[in-house]
Length: 174
Ligand SMILES: Cc1cc2nc3c(=O)[nH]c(=O)nc-3n(C[C@H](O)[C@H](O)[C@H](O)COP(=O)(O)O)c2cc1C
Image (cartoon, rainbow, N blue to C red; front, side):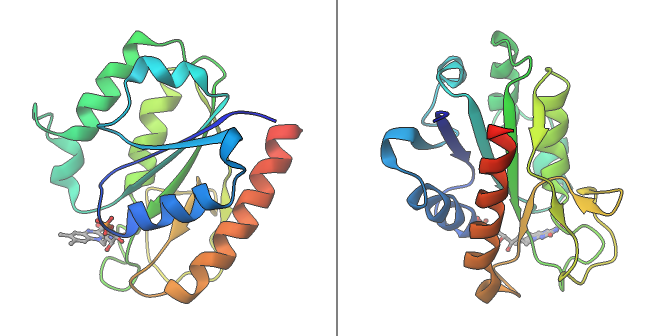
């Protein structure tokens, strides 16, 4: 069995809730869970597959290269690593009704940071069943990772996680 690292930010809201739901579904010897402040980037080498989770809360969170931006600090740390061929799956929280033009955009930023360092992104997800206009995470009609909407479709979250993890296990063994 591959060793899985589940890594998320921010703490205390829907992203953490979903990260914990994902963690619960793994055998504990095969998976660990961290928020991005609780793991050194160099420890990521211990994992065969990373499941990265984030939300979308406005462009400024992502685009300002401020020293206190937690994701930017984390991404810069990744430069110390060899991520070539490391498998990375992404989940992203968003709200398709309030933010229909930027639904789960944040997943694309996580994807870009890992992909430019050579990681292999796995776990794309159908866009059927969501109601949004545009998303940076929609690539050729598929989300680049699991889109979760706890604000508008919380009742679908558990089923989506189950299906996505079943799919990931197939992709990891394939
Ligand atoms: C200020 C603000 C901006 C947001 N912008 C977006 C957005 O652009 N796209 C989107 O899909 N969701 C957006 N959301 C919704 C959040 O991504 C969603 O509520 C998510 O579940 C929050 O996760 P958290 O509770 O872990 O912070 C925004 C929420 C807030 C409060």
